[in-house]
Image (tube, rainbow, N blue to C red; front, side, top):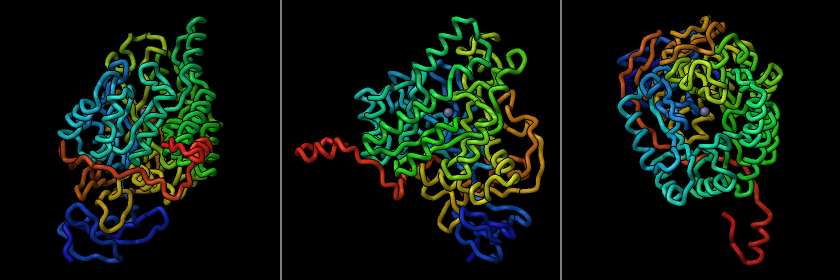
Length: 485
Ligand SMILES: [Zn+2]
């Protein structure tokens, strides 16, 4: 058999095994994995390197306006380039509905932003902020297009859809095999805290972290899970930032709930003390849920090791530290008027590798699961996330020994700061391939604008999770009334 590309002499890592093998690629697809593969129009030497499934970034904000109208600094070009330099082959940003907007309009808008620009394969999670009857009617069509995950918010006045709205979304998602993702924070607790701080004149960035208590996340995670259980729908909790929240996820998974979750590097690398930097420096570290403390970091690592989280995602939300981003309401705006979010799409995997694998907190198999394989399964990318014949040739070749100090330039994004700057890293992705195309090689971009493809995704795979049967629906059925969703 002849191959267009052969990757040879590398150490292939899968969730379960690490072994020496060559990989033959044809037509963008892995055609063979074998001990020795001769030939190949192009031969890529992976001697001394790790050959892993390319990362799948499942949580990032690209070319997206916040509900208050600020555009992210990264578009689909710079966002996908930055993702690729960070070891990713595929990403799934959000397509965000603003209130009153039709879903058809949302999708057309994001298609226009992504298709001409992305260097990587992509899909979207649909953000729903206004679940009106007309919008709910549009959702099956979105699902049919292969957009099989819907994200909702329990916080922010302009995004929060309320418990009943969430039950409607969960029910439709369940009917179609779609996945509901949720930002879980108790909106009223946050607003009440904000009023207390405002009344006391406490508006510096550091009060942002205190205004969104751990309890606000824990309460909302518990409520979100309860809503999902009522209708036995699959649920994904994004950016879990507390030990208590992770404990709830763990307990519910043990009980068989159809539940998935992620955490993010910023909750492992940074703390609320970073918001207390001099002047307005702290604004760079404002994100929601907020940064916590060192005990939380340890707790989250324990949960990563124990398998509580499917993935570690970046939640890349790039707002520059200038009037186009963080300071759109002035250079000394009070914290509620500073844009929320921080960049990190290029640092997610190097940080996870360095802190996790190189420091012995997780195995190489864990790294592959957390960076790629689980996201493929949960988000319905059925030809990605594994090095197996028939799968897309989405591959990242890592030098596990390379040491670097993180710089802003190495991010390749459109940002003017990196919250990870100065951190020492061991392990770096040297070559990233997407669908057989080399995208990044030895620090150089090799792919062109618009070469990435939209990938239609499959229904969420809840595997053998038993789920939850609400007794009330069963009793109603005994009364002869079938009202279960
Ligand atoms: Zn986010």
